[in-house]
Amino acid sequence: MSSLGPILEELGEDVLLQILCSSDIYTTLSASRVNRYLNEITRAKQLWVLHVQDLVRRGLIDIPPPFILEDFSTASLIDLVKCVVTGPETWTAGSVPQVSAEITLNPVKDSTSGFVGDCRAKLLAGGRHLLFPRSTALELWDVTTQRLIWSAPFSPLHFEARPAPGSIILAALPFDETTGATILEIHHIDTRAGESTALLRLPVVQHDCLQDPKIRDDLVLVPMRALLIEAVLLINWHTQRYMLLEVGLFTEAPDVGLLPGHLFVATPYSASHDGLQLDVYNLKTLEPLWRRLADINFAVRVKLVDHAHSVLPLPTAGLLPTDIEILQMVVHESPLNAGIYNISIYAWGYPRRVVARYSCVATIGKPNGQVEVECVSVGRAPDELQDVQQLSYAGYALDGMTHGLWHAASHAESQVLAMAERCEWTHLSTGSGVVTRVMSTEIVLSYYR
Image: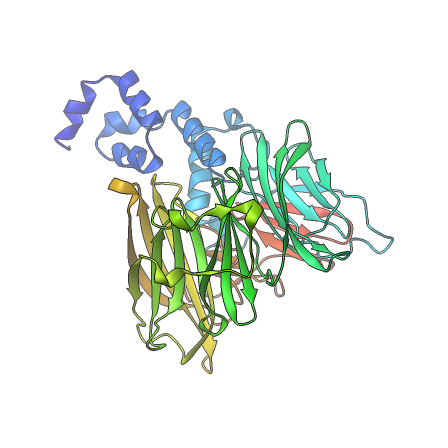
């Protein structure tokens, strides 16, 4: 028995439960291992309902039907958390993927032939709402009631949204055929009333927008390209300020991640291609670069590398090809540890078709807003892996062409999910691994055991 056990027991069950209710899941799991007394306290249903509610609020878990947490047993609530951390149990090697529940949405068809347009349906973080771009409109559906609750008269090729209690912040990049320009639209959607407020409508000139925006708190980051220059437009929609940052050449294949108070840029070494580096910028040091959004000038960019930052070299481990063609960085907030973020970096290159994988951990909340970053593992991902934009926290990625389910953190064989022949689009949620399929006349959400 831990020497700490008797001391904690003196606090009493009610006090200990109150402490655990305000802690993170990692603390609860640690307490469960101290002794039997604490183990029993950590199995209180009230505690796990609060933990899962917090994960829903942070958009880290997708609640399956019946959606009401109080209807789940303690064991089922713990299983929901396990599903986020390790993926569905039936997705492991040697298992057959099994669906535990399905939800079908029935949007009105665009034409007699079914849906047209991009059809990139996306289940939003938290699992309650789904965005569906049609040929002429963007629709927001409530998954729990299976109803259309909001729509806008534009159809973006790239978009992202962040849910909050009772609302959603949407950043979308539709193309305006009248002006021939991409428009950055930022909206605040009231999900209870089904109404929205336009926070920004900004024509993007002299740059191409080729990726989905990224949202963190009041910030929206838009990856952009101008000829051979990779840049990011960072907007604080609350203060109506912006900075336009040059992050590297197109040939250097940089990618950018947004964490609380920090920008992360993954790029090859400047001297050679036998390794990568992760550049970390504290947004406080970039404070002088903010400009009024009303005065935006797309012709003026600031070189990010000229400003103070820290550098984390990432070793090659003999994995990287000669020329790196694509870098992709995915950031996941840890569901277990408060202030911990997992950063996954994948590098594709030629002539060898090898996918190198780097796993880093960032700890936010150090004194003076500092961040500590370390590379915890380097390895190979499956060579067949095409991209990791839909990477789940547990490390799974879905190939929309073959429907292969790859464990992107290992070199394991793929699972193949059962898909209907008329599947137009598939999407894997970053939380619990919910698979969304756009069929010719309906949208199906599959929850796996």
